[in-house]
Image (cartoon, rainbow, N blue to C red; front, side):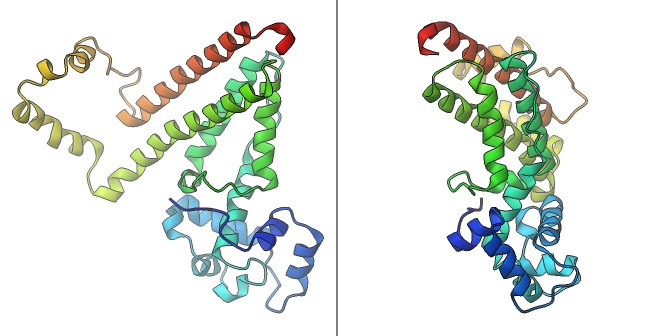
Length: 268
């Protein structure tokens, strides 16, 4: 886990919002300029993070990818802390901001949630950036503006909409995190999912012969087929997370509809 917002606040915010001051600084500061820009540096940094995660990211690695030294980058991006803020915000520009709501708020929220789920899986390093320190960049706000606009169509009070938006973000991020970590587990541990489960599940009946008596509800779910997946050809945890995402999103949307019905019309 890494924390954004650790660089110089003024420098980070002016770069994020591309104020005239930030552009002028990049143009007039000494150092090699040809072929480099903030955007070129960010594209290289994002490519590294997509391939190697946050552990592989450094100013030196970005410089090497661009055929430059790390020092050549500092004219444009002061240090790694500001680089992280800029990367995080820039990558969110990939998200759609115009989900159609012709089918109502429910269709709009479904499309938005599916878009965000896919975004997290394309860029799992984003999930390694803590939500405790928001970046406060324009694309991060555009993401919030999009879902806030869809939620406005529910007619719910503003404080209810804010809580629901937070719940949606946490739910989508959490289920996507499971997939991202499952994909990283084999390389990080040296064992495939199948090898890991076989080595331990085979021992469960030996070390806990009374498992069914001790955990009757879990055991009954097993006998009733609760752990059988819709698609057995996909890795177990990935498929389970996808099914959780779909069913959980349905429950959340049903809850929003129930909240709408329970809210007096004059309070919407």
